Image 1 (cartoon, rainbow, N blue to C red):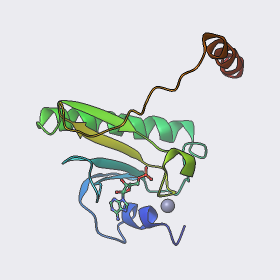
Image 2 (tube, helix red, strand yellow; image 1 turned 180 degrees about the vertical axis):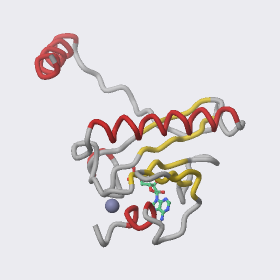
Image 3 (cartoon, protein in one colour; image 1 turned 30 degrees about the vertical axis):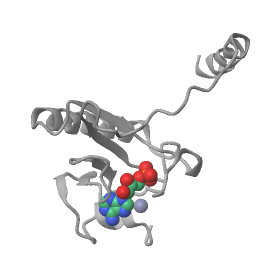
Length: 137
Ligand code: AMP
Ligand code: ZN
């Protein structure tokens, strides 16, 4: 994708704070970090989001996210880590190139991920579970 900023960063056409690189991935620091050490795992090939990537690429990407999370803990950047991955505008995806966020967290750091609880009746919960269960099994 010629106009994709993450394609350009992942393939080294635009400079970044690179933390790791191999044939398939580049790991960089997010330019607008939620906390110091906020990291992005970028595949070098362009995929829009999780609906487009192969199972094997998802596996490799999450293994790198795990490795990064462990390093952030070991190095003292984090007391806990959020690993998150947005898919589609409705879910807050702003860059249309599959990526995983690894966000270092400290107790009471004020970073917010969780929203208010959505009230759902027990009956509705049951219906939802049944519908999704059917699709997954
Ligand atoms: P998302 O909302 O999941 O699509 O996240 C996109 C992330 O990319 C945001 O956290 C941005 O701060 C980050 N970002 C956007 N442009 C750049 C860039 N040039 N270098 C590093 N991170 C970027
Ligand atoms: Zn791209």
